[in-house]
Length: 233
Image (cartoon, rainbow, N blue to C red; front, side, top):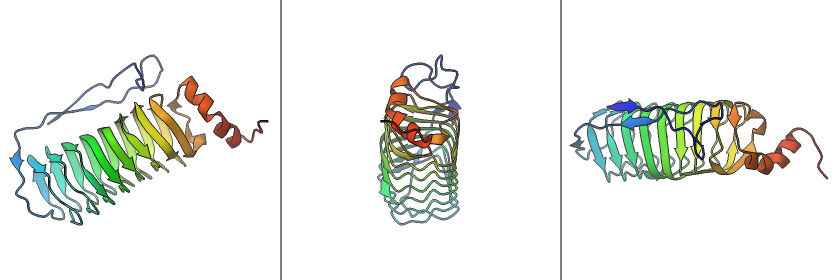
């Protein structure tokens, strides 16, 4: 069962003294788990209290499945279909894969650690009290997703797409954010001060509702000037 923390204040990427509300982090406490039997995932399957270890789910279909109080460790998720899946009170450690389909899924009270993923589809998904720590995720698709109390910590995000997404109490802590797309996104209490580098490819005008550092402001000045139509010579 997951217990919810109150978030971290202060420090790089923290929210102390900034007027921005800190994200509430998940604190997952798993029960004693049973080893998974090694079978293939099933659409609309129900997985409760299971330990998935070194499982290869490449190309399998678990659309609509529910994972509750589960641990997934070193699992392969290449082209795995988890459309509209629900992942609740669970821990995912060192998942790897390309093209994982988690569109319109629900992640609540989830810890994702040391991921090596590319082209993950999370468009239209709902993430609440989620900690993504370490690892690297390329081309993360979060278009029109809803993120509430989400922390990206010590990870590398390359070309993440937040187009049209709603971000509420989201923190980037010691995190590299490269070529991010914020087009049409809505930000509320988003702390970007711990993002280094902070690179906004599109949607620089959507930063209202976010807090950045003075150094980041200077780095973004050319993009902000271009957006405002200011010519700098």
